[in-house]
Each structure stands twice: as structure tokens, then as C-alpha cells.
Image (cartoon, rainbow, N blue to C red; front, side):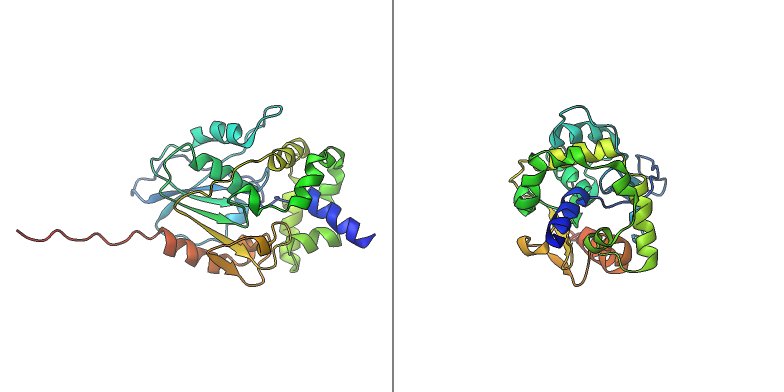
Length: 255
């Protein structure tokens, strides 16, 4: 019985990975710093990225929009794409937002991309969870369930500290249940098999939403859970800065 409850909670809570919404401008700031577009977790926003330290970069947070009936992830990504107004941007995608970012990267030229606690292709996802979503279990998720704290919720999101639990509850309390159900259905039907270019994957070894065992990330964060971008931000910031750093220009030889 306990195992069934764990599976149920894993299915209905997968891919939530952000906090309260914050708007961002869609252009580079006056000093010409490079722009990073952030795709947060399911139906959420930018607060989960608040602890990242990325000096020298202008941060823009993609805002979720309402999904159309039976809309696919590629089509939804196409509608979000209009928020990206800088050419060859840097992109950071978290959880469900990372999957959307992968689809966006097929439609525009991306300089470099980082996926955190996310998936490159459909093969990175848990087939058992996908089966339950295809079976339509997302229809029976009660909205009140997403707004109540419980052991299974904390267990699967890897939240142990009181502050982390508090932030998780903020996330869930602001989740749009209609959008949540659409996302689960769309994830189950996601058919991407082509890993994106110029992309690295950062994943936690203790992630219970998207298991690290099936993945081959460039960086494994020991003990990192699904919300490690919030509580292991220093480590992740260093990785992002190192990857986004452009190689020094090679001077032309004097004639």
C-alpha cells in the first residue's frame, strides 16, 4: 500500500519546480551584458532561481501562458518563443521548463543551454510514470492535494529543511491545476528523441521526480533533489558560469 501511494504521488507531482511569478524585461540592459532566458518549473516562476549568482548576465524570466486545448509541447514552445527577443541567447531550463526550452531550441538559434533537473529527450523520463499519465490519471488529481503539505510531497521533492518545505508549499499553492493537468498529458505525449546541441545537463543524484539513473548528465550533484537549484545554488552557479564563459579571442598575427 505504501509503495502504491509513493507511485501515485510521484506521478501527480512530477515536474513542479518553481516558485512565485516575477516578470522580466525581454531585452539586454544598457551596459550590454549577455542575456539569459530562464524557463522555470511547471506553471511557476522565477523565485526558484533567486539564489543563483550569475554576475555579468541580464536575467529574463519566461512567463507561462495558458495552454490551448490538446496543445502539444512543440506548439506551446512556439507561442512562448515570442518572449525571446535577443539573438543567440543563453537559456536555462528547469524541470518541465527544460523540456519546453528543448523545443524552443529547435526553433531558434541558441548560443548555449543548461538543463537543470530536466530531460533532454523522452527517453530520459520514467516510462512507468508516463504510462500512468497516458492512462489519464492527471484528470483525477484534486486541486486541494497540491496545496497540502505531507510526507510524500517532501520526500519526492527532496525538501528537508523547514525553509525548503515552506518554499515548496508556496510553489504548490500557486499551481494552476488546469495547466498542471495539461502539462502532465503533454509530457506523456512528448516524442523528442534528438538531444539538443550546445547543451549540458545538471542533475541531482537524489532526484526522485526524474531519476538520475537513466540519465547521462555532464554534472551530477551529490545529494541534489529536484529543487536543488534553490538549495545548491552556489554549486550550480559555478557550473553555469564556467559553461557560458566564452573562449578568449585568438589575436590575428601581425603582417
